[in-house]
Length: 325
Image (cartoon, helix red, strand yellow):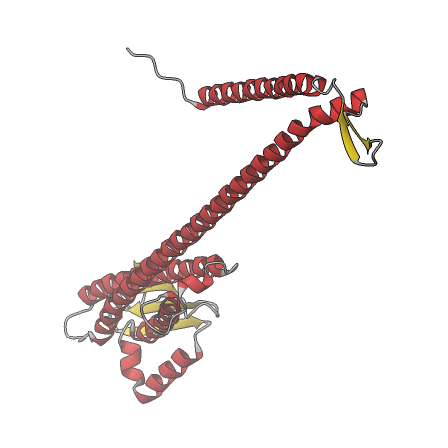
């Protein structure tokens, strides 16, 4: 905020009130300046000034109080230097953290080893958010410096000829404006690298998930093949049982003995066969064929129903064709 007005002692008076941040862990510094253009005197009011900037200002005031008071925006130079230095330190700290997430520097942590880290995504998000915050602070500083430089040109044009307004403070502000823009570009570059790391993180995570799903699908297929082999074995066992079951049933049903072992009058062992033994194959063989036939008919009907159900389900899942115009 700035204001140019007329005063009683001086013809022109310029007032400005600015805010500067010195890092994220302390309150901002507020600077109020009144500059009497005709006499070339400056009055400053500082609120929550950083200790290092305060000591620099006091040292300069003790060394050369006249030049400090007569040169407008000189105190701004000390405040801006502290603000820029704190932003540069934060950008450097965030830069080192970005390098720890990259694979190609040797000192970083490989992404493959932290894909399943629960707080990995949170850390990357926090890092990107910090970059956005410091970029915003650098933009604020750049706008403040642009305003102060324009105000300095105005004050210089209003200064009476022969007063000899110094350009050192304006040059200092211009220098830190250039450094601020350079620092902002660096922060933007590393913020973009952070976003690339996040994209790589999610890409590798998706690949790992796809590989896991493929392994699960292979295991499911293997289980299905084993189940099919077990089913084939059970069918074989059932078929063997069906072969012997009719004969066993007929033997139990008739409860007849077709072979009779004994001895003749000479004491020799003999085996007598009943003349009705032909009943057994005549009844057993057709009954066995009948059982297998009924089972085969039932199996084919079941397969036909299953196939019809699959065709109906596929027809329901297929999207309807759009009508032609």
